Length: 174
Image (cartoon, rainbow, N blue to C red):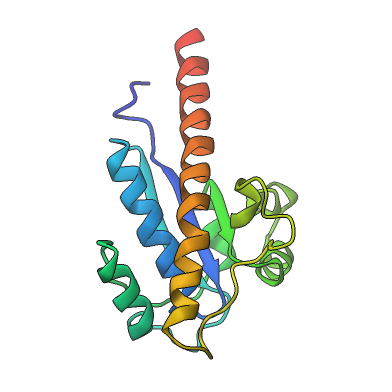
């Protein structure tokens, strides 16, 4: 199978309501994927644990922080569904509560194994495993989230790139 006919590697970022952290993480990661020239090989989306904001745009403070940092901020919130595990290679949670909820929602152990904590990709975040929810705060909280997300997106991209290279080598060896 050629790389152009291989299905894309799909990454979904998940937070509580899909209006703050997960759309920010998706926007940053999507930009890193494009910069790496992996547009056709990696697809990025996001969702929330709950559906409270389904159909709404991202929080205006998240949009403002993304736009101020030259990230695409277009987004419509939606709720993560258990059946989506079959279509995703990685489900990236923004905090440990999301990890627990997503693993509980997973239909099978192999689906639960797709769930990872975003900051687990960054060395040295030991005391800060979660990207804090900025929703009840001010714009500074959104800036802080972006500052945590950006290096994690770089590290996640490295991991995804390695996975893609390994799968390409395995396909070539067949």
